[in-house]
Image 1: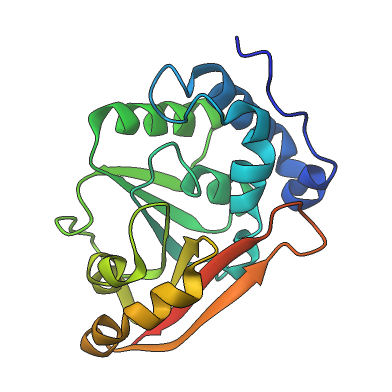
Image 2 (image 1 turned 60 degrees about the horizontal axis):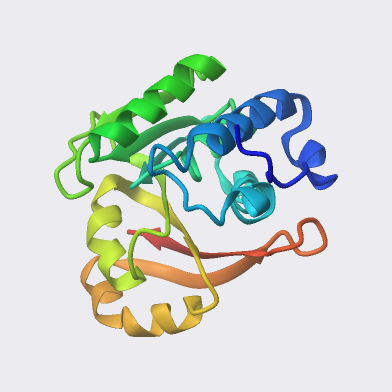
Length: 210
C-alpha cells in the first residue's frame, strides 16, 4: 500500500457533502492501485486529493441537474468518477478506448455503487450513443482545437463543452478559431473554479454547441 498519500484536505468534505465516504474510497483505491495499473504516475500520490480529486470536484456545480455528461478519455475516472460521486443526480457516460482502464472504471462503478455511471469502450470519434449529451468533459486529453471534433458531435443542440485545462487555456482558445467556426461553437470562455476553496484552482474552457 502506498504510504505517502496526501492527507485529505479540509475542503473535501464541503465539496462532497454526504458523499465524502465514496470520495475517500475512490481516492484510497487510486492511491493503492493507480501507479501499478498505469493510471497515475509515481509522483501523484502525495498530491492526489489536491491536484486530481478536488481539481475535478469543483467542476460538479456546472452540470445541469438531471442531465447527461460524457467524459471523453476517462482514464482513471478523473473527472468522470469524481463527478458521478459529487452529482448523483447526473448521468455519466465514461468513454475510454483502453481495456485496462475500462476494467478499472467498471470495478469502481461497482465497488462504489454508482448507478448513475455507464462505461463505454470506444474512441471518442467512434462512439455511438443513443442520445446526445447535455455536457461533454475531458481532462488532460488533447489541445482544445483537437478536442472540438471529438467532443462537439456528442453534444445536443444548446449543450455545453466543459473541458478541464491548464494555465495555457486562453492560448488554446485562440489557436482553435478555425474549429470553433466549423463546429458552430459559441460563447467560448475560460473560467477559473475553486478560488478560495482549494489550493490549486481549476481552469475550464466552457462553450455552447449550436
